[in-house]
Amino acid sequence: MAAEAPADRADRLMKQWDTNQDGRLSREELPERIRPNFDRVDRNGDGFISLEEHRAVGRRQRQQGTRQQPNVARQWSNVEIKRDLPYAGTDDPRQRLDLYLPKERKSAGPLPVVVFIHGGAWGAGSKESGIRRVAPFVDTGQFAGASINYRLSGQAIWPAQIHDCKAAIRWIKAHAKEHNLDPAHIAVWGSSAGGHLVAMLGVTGDVKALEGAVGPHTNQTSRVTCVVDWFGPSNLPTMNDPPGKMDHMGPGAPESRLIGCPVKDNPEKARAASPITYVSKGDSPHLICHGDQDPTVPHDQSVRLAAALQKAGVPCTFITVKGAKHGWGHHPTVDTRVGLFLEKYLLGKDVTVSAEPVEMGT
Image (cartoon, rainbow, N blue to C red; front, side, top):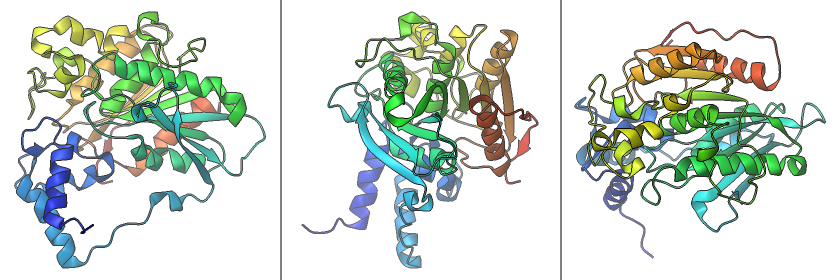
């Protein structure tokens, strides 16, 4: 079989990633691992990547002789990966998870688990992106990890996504003894649409109506210990407040595709898919991080969620990343605070997690 021409590959990826089929790519539509390159590729600064801008990346790489980066899994020598475990008891690849276990553990006891849930506007993305977030913690020997797939909005509408996430948590608890995991200490971490889903897990551990019946382990609870929410939507009916570069209310919006109808015409259904709707005393502690220049998911979404959690008496640390847009990726200060947060709630360490804003690029 002939090798795929570079231009054909660029066009194929454009079609694959362009989930709303508008002929351009938003930051959220890109796979999470390459979102940090968004501003460099968006040459005209209009907040979207055109087909020509997308093709130009390949041309520049060929001219510069850019080589593909090695497999990121090689960076963490202490991490064993068990891939594609079917948490729902089906053959659906969207209902599988990858489990990350340290080859050498710091202690013989069961390990707490850090679970990553990917973003992608609920219509794209995969569990493969989770290794960059979870593996560094597993590599220390103090944590286990997991990264999950869930059914995308093109396959099934809400609440299928949260039903899958809850089934994955129940699977981890049901198999805790087998893998020497601590079912009482599970953190969930997600970005963008994944941030929405981990926040939902954190505030609906006591909401029976959202448990669903996915998977064979419905005797387990889906309650999680703590939540790390990176720039996730929290209140779908208010996603246009303030207005940004995209309309979140129309039929083609990711939020509308998630609930199966335009948000503007079905605010009650949108509210039922919003984490802020379910906030109550006793919910899981949250660490929320959001850029104040986010044109895709307004910074105000996290402001609202943090305020609701704090009003309900739920421990919540809210970090604003000044100057950051959507999908900003790694920030050394934020990464350090995530680590402290996980140590506090999963390892029981007496540490303080600062809520002071941080500057992008520092």
